[in-house]
Image (tube, rainbow, N blue to C red; front, side, top):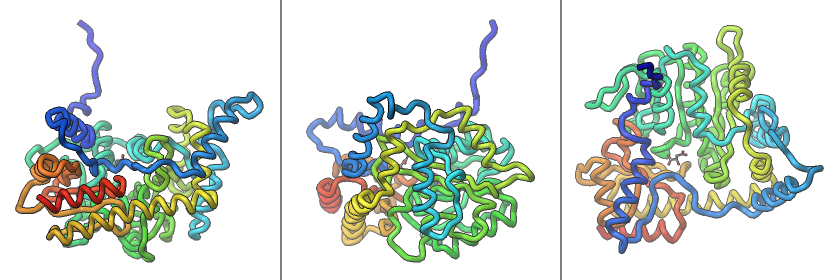
Length: 406
Ligand code: MLT
């Protein structure tokens, strides 16, 4: 009998998506222990309501949609000009970076962009990723058939270049020994909360330009940077226009995890021979995507208004206060901790030689606190654990006091 075929690369994926697996585990635990109140500091999902300036913009846009004269249907291919211009000015021009509005593609989030962007590259390109790493970068390349075979013992893919980020290097990657085609970087980093300085990022840009590689730079956590020498965008580096795509998110800086908005920046100078990656991404965007909703893009514009910036600065400060509580609390309890200074993630070494998943179970059972096992982000994450600062202040304080008690 004739039978259609599936994309067998999907079958190579071990287990389910990290945060789905954790969600299921926690749901099962809650069903068995209805008496236990569980505090979730696992997935980096925000908890504070949208800022008033954003709510006002949403209300205003909804009202516009109610009248024929101000109604909006399909959004323009690249996104609305008002949002792209605001980003080009505030995210780039104000930082001395040369990015034009028409090099910015509005999307429904950096997760989708970071998963989709690999489509414009050949299947036999080799990717290099930090280890540990946000799992979407690797999993979507597995789905595309770009990663070779999986070794269950080492939990690595044969064709992926892993760049270990260990405490010896302050959780920063070193330049790879083998030459990759596509390099995924995320700073401030998810999951370790580490950062690199502008001169360090410049080395990556120089390396990519010299070796004919492209950098996919995930800047989702840029709003959490508190130190001076940490770059807010890769385009602060000379030469980044010819080697880097940058992904921006509204999830963490403005609480849009449930609203959905992001952007990919593809400079027109970024070329493979004569072909502009901008043209390929524009073709893909136009063909497969109909744009983030008008009301959401209006909300995104409000992120750049004076009121929006003030209110969101307060929101970031709220979460970073949580980060300080987690960092200081764990440190005083004898844990080895890092991150939490330029990022909303705290990275800790599991105590007493426990594996990451053993510590996950231990924390859930004895403290009712959910975190993320470091090994879920890659083999070098084994023996580590991530806590997020995105909980409420009250829950963060309660979680740390529960952890200290065990
Ligand atoms: C995380 O917890 O790593 C992030 O929230 C996941 C995401 O942004 O998709």
